[in-house]
Length: 289
Image (cartoon, rainbow, N blue to C red; front, side, top):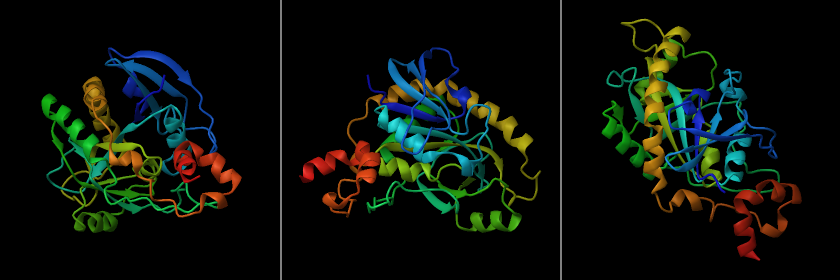
């Protein structure tokens, strides 16, 4: 049976009341192994895949996360919707630690991460104007509202390379762009999910004010971990309701994002590229025959 929904985040997210663990699965991919075993659990009557982004025990730096393998592995299980959970810093006075943000836009400040499935003999360009699925964000927002958890329905996420936090000058620059958040994990994950035609939304959990704000303590690992524990507990309580809410969604433009994206003549695509990407685009190659 396919697993239609996935959560990418910390391994503690699926240790919740009412979650029935069905199996842990190693999923080999053309890009190597994912961050860790994929745990498949039954929640709210649905099969949900959980993947710890940084590996169990938080072993992988943001730049080391094997996002190509992670997204391919989830697609191979039948996943149509991914809810990403990510810790972020705030670039706005009104977005306080403990608040959640359902981001609607991205600025890419990364530099060392493989960020596309295209290449190697296949050229494609997906639309990425709206990097987070609006329909998925809307359903998650309804759950936050019912639980009365403080959240913001939109906001721009600046994704930096890391692993060091921002300098004060960088933080002030990012805040001057009217961006809401600074983090290290939304990319290339969101872009790869779009190329894989998977609906994707990020629950950005604010752990601190970034260092543009000088009237308080500068961000530290201890500060992040303390707030993160409370944030994770809140999301864990809401995941069953989130799964129920998103399970009722119908088709979505995200799931045909590559319908007109591939420019390469199917007859000219090398066998190796075809083998790697048939999971995503084989339906289009078949239609072109």
